[in-house]
Image (cartoon, rainbow, N blue to C red; front, side, top):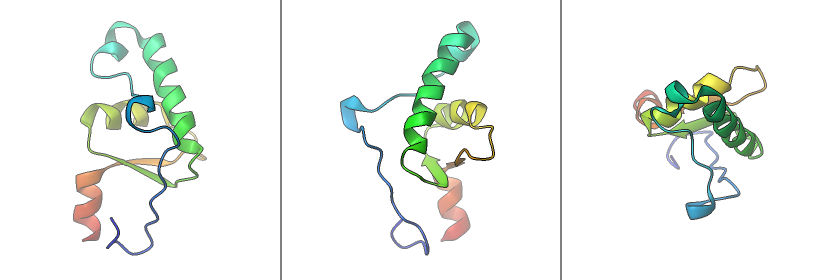
Length: 88
């Protein structure tokens, strides 16, 4: 990512075991209200970084975050591989 022009890495405040996780693969189908709450909490943490774009390599995180990031003020949620392919 350092070789991509105009990219600034903005780490999340909580990382490792303290990091928020998305709702995973099937929770949104079995318990949609719980999944939305989990994903909303993760989106709030992501917004605190001030990032315009959030990259993930996890298909489920990509799907879950795109479901809750619907406001114009929310960061764009993108797949890491696609992002790198477009810019390298």
